[in-house]
Image 1: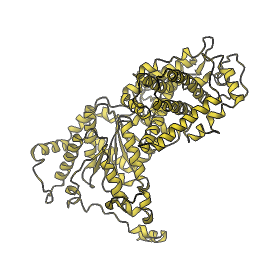
Image 2: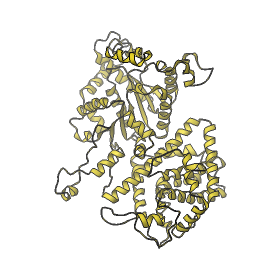
Image 3: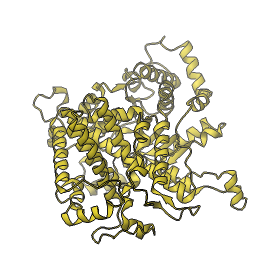
Image 4: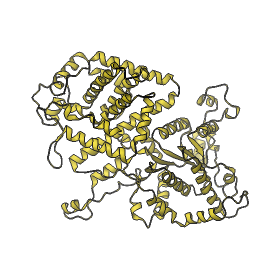
Length: 598
C-alpha cells in the first residue's frame, strides 16, 4: 500500500526539464549524482527497510494515531504525506545558491542575497507547499472529515520538521513553530519573495505559500496539539506522536545515509540485520544439554509436584521456572510486555533466551532481539554464555553483536572483487559498511546497555536517532530493571508501554529483586510523586513501588510470567541469596565513607 504512495510522486515531475539539479558530487565513480538519482535510491532503501522490518502494521498504527475512521481518500493522503518525507527531503537542493556553491553547478539564475546555501529548511517549505495544495483540493471537495482536518494540517508541520532535521540534532518543536521560530522566520516578506524568485524558475509551479498561509497552518497545528493535551488518553497520544516523529526521522536518516554512502563510497547495504529464520538460532539452543534436560523433566515430572519447599536439587526449581514462564507466555502471546521476576541464580538468562525465541517462533514478524543490561560486565557474562551455546555454529555467532563503549565495531569482510582490487588482501575489511552497520544496528541479535537503549529512545543528537526504527518488531529483554532510577519509573513504564503498542515490540522485563522504592523517596513527597488523589486505594498510599507495579500489570498490554512468586522467592535455595541494605541512606557523606572503609 505504501509502495503505491511512494510511486505517486516523481522528482522529475517537480523540476523543469531545462535544469539539471545535483544532489552529490565527487562520488566513488566520479559521476555526478542528480537529485532524481539520489531520491530514487532513497526510495529503494525505504522499500527495503519497509519490507525487511515488516512495517505495514506500524504505519497503520500511525494512521490510527492521527486519523479517526479515515476514508479511502484520507488514507491515501496520509500515506502520500508520509512517503513524501522521503521523496521531498532534499528538494531544497534546487536552491541555486546551494547548486552553485556546494555542487559547482551554475543554473544561470540570479542568486538571492538573503538566501543561504541551506537546503533542509527549504525542502520543508516545498513539502508544505506541495501537500497544502493537495489538502486544500481534497478539503474543498468535501473529502476530508472535520475531525481529521486539523490532523492533516498538523502533519504538514510535523513532517516538515522531520525534513528540516535530517542533518542536525532535534530540539524543542517551539523553536520551529513559534512566532520567532525557524519556519516563520523564512516568511518575512523580503525573504519569501526572494526565495520565490530563485525557486519558481526551477520548480514545476510557482510556490503558493506566504506568511499568512503559514500562520494559519501553525494555528491549526496548535489547535491540534491543544486537543491532544486536553483530550482523552492524552499521554498515550502524546507518546504516539513522539514515536511517529522519531521513527520517521530515523527512517529518513537511514535512507539518506545508505543512499549517500552507496554513491560516495560504493557501499551498498544488502542486509539490515533482521532475523529471517529463528530456527537458525533456536535449533542450536535446543541442542544444548540444559534445554534437553528441561524438556525431559517437562515430559516426566512437570505438573506432578505442588510443594517444592523441601527440594534439594536447585535445578528442579530452575526447570520449573523455565516451564512456568514459557507456559504463561504462550497463554498471553498477544500481550506486549512480559514481567519476569526471578531470584538470583534461577537461570533467568536461559529463560529469557527461550522466551525471546518462542515469541519469534510464534510471530515471524518479529525480526530482531535486543538484550539490554545495566553494566558492561553483565554484557560480557552473557556474551560468554551465548558464545558457549553457539560455539559450534559460527554463522550464528557472526550475527551477534555487542554495542557499547568497550567493544570495537564488528568487521565486515570485503567481497572477492574488493579483496582482489585492494592488493589481493584476503583480510580486507569494508570499514564503511562496518560503520553503517554499527550506526544503524544492522545486526540480528544485539547485546547493549541501558544507556545505549535509552539514548536511541530519547537522545537528541542525530546519532542517537539513527537506529530508532530498528526497535520496531523487535524483542527487547531488559535485565536488572531495578537498577533504573525510581524517580523516572513511571515515565519508563509509560514509554515502554507506548512504544510496544505502536512499534509492535515485545518486551521482557526481568528483575532479580525489586527494591523498596519508598525507601528511595523523600517521605513528604510520596503522595505528590504519583496520583494526586484522596481516593487512592489504601494499599498504595505511601508505596510507589506497589502502585506502579500494579498499574503496569493491570494494563491489558502486560502480564506477569511467574504467577506463584513465593514458589521461588521463599524457597530456601533462593531466598537468602540477596539482601537489600538501606542502612547507608540515612548517613552523612563522611559517615558513609567511614562505613565503607570499615
